[in-house]
Image (cartoon, rainbow, N blue to C red; front, side, top):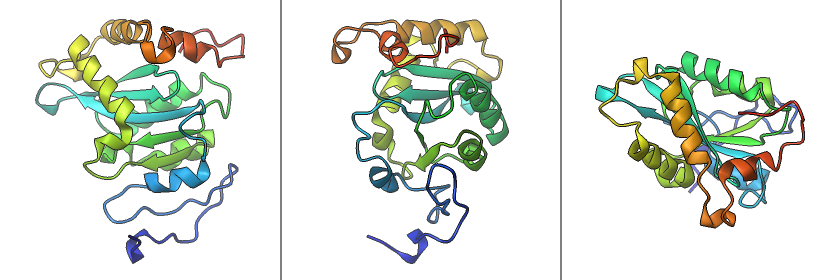
Length: 204
């Protein structure tokens, strides 16, 4: 149901054609419900990411996770701190590895650590959306993969402020190199790399 809080207001028009809007009360940015009209083939096209953070012992430290929906590739960024500055720094560094417009959108969890979304959206010309509060099912694939990472070794007993990069890389490699029935028994990494045409891009 529409309300005055969810109505759009005039904003900056970006190169990718959308107008920046303020989110409704309690929401950081554009609602996930705006995504369908921007991407009618969202469910079947490559390049859409779901994003969240996973915290460690006593909510100390964090990693950022991103899941590409078609390949099911899971990216883990060792951000150490659950802050907007740390998120933007690491996310920007990672996105710079890819050709512009390789990714089309990011759907974030509605956490305040993603408050710097405008900077990322503008820098990389990405559509960004936010799931509703307390609705992890709206990022279902990412949420499921976060659970698998917990099981693989990113347990709540670890202090993520000092998480070794080697452990993060090891767990990410394990998850992305397991054949999956839903991918025709290909690995997420194989499917992801099938969309890469830039010869200089050899690793994510």
